Image 1 (cartoon, rainbow, N blue to C red):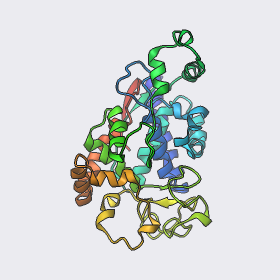
Image 2: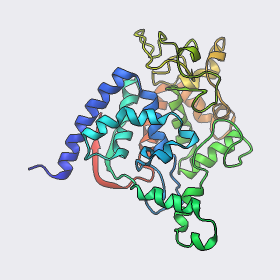
Image 3: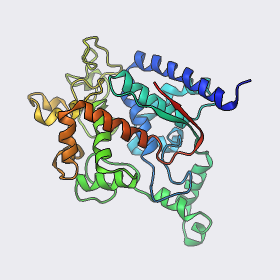
Length: 325
């Protein structure tokens, strides 16, 4: 009779097959990568106690977290994988979310990223603690809530692509460092992970950082229903609309880093934000930006390593199951 760990591993294999079919059919690679990032970005390297340290614990599934401004549109991502998650109820949300991201990257032509699985999910009680902190009106009430929980709730959790920055940073590069250093990531890992913008789009009706909305009426020349977003001539973009960072925004490559050096005749139809420019301008980030512009192989190696680290930020493991794609 198989052990619980063996059953969990079998479910992981079958879940991966279903995620592959889902992503190939719906072209949802980018939003599933964003979902995985958004689950991880709550991490604070200075907080040890789980789950108050934040990070990869599946808490992005909670409505309260999805309702945060930075997570606009991610309810759709959770809905996309919910049926698969229900079929494999033994698996944690944290594992399914992280698996979906690396499957999507691989299907888009990116590196094969081997993760470790067996993460635990944060309990719903975490939200009750957050609610207690937010509703506390005086010091006496706060004494009943741990200082660790208080710091987690008050932390300027999410990065912003445009000013004003939630941490009060005067410039984009300072804001990037504040966010990524809080995650325990270095400059190389920071730039590599930002290269994930080679996939996907932004929308006026979600993050509000561009003038292009979801739907055909909000599409650029690269996000129309007939656009060649995969770069394979097959067409098909899923939902049309929004503005992408790259021309082939369903293809994982180093084109994000090559943007500055290439023809800019259609730049008005592509996205480039202050935080993107900061990676090129900032002396600490620029060497890695140029390295990845020169070599896609170098980018893939560094991205894969950084993504593995990101996928384990704040994670607590019940099992340690290594699984290749």
